[in-house]
Length: 196
Image (cartoon, rainbow, N blue to C red):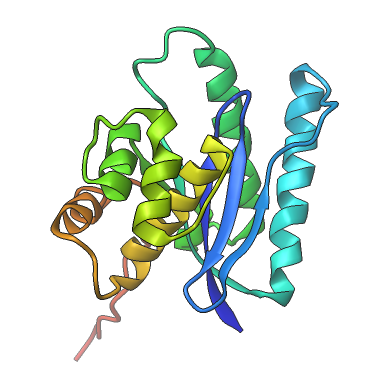
């Protein structure tokens, strides 16, 4: 059974998931298929669909790490929709793993950190990401959101496995992501002998 890393680009209009394995390569990609309902029914459909995508992975391997793009603070419109989508994704993943399991809490990667990890430049234009990913990893995507989700899966792998061959700027991004998750480790209890 192989290790699988998940990247999630949580756009309110262009949500994308990528499942990637260092041994198998690209395992699968997913985007919502139209027609999509609106409002809370859309959120419920996303929960069901994302759960189904994770469930399908059981035959391919085990999820070892998840990275999700954090909210863009520069976004001028659609912040509420982005917040709803992000919360829906987080709650869906939390329902898939035990609440004391680090995998239940994706690492949150700022857009600039993602760009820096994939291209070496945190200010790379979104439209250039696919081209840069092709140059770096030899994988060609015609969808920018799938490309970003792929880069996020690579970030998840770098965080969990610390593979050989990371560039200095990738190591810098990984170091800056330490603690960028909502997971709180449960402290280990020590037995204390009382008495005599």
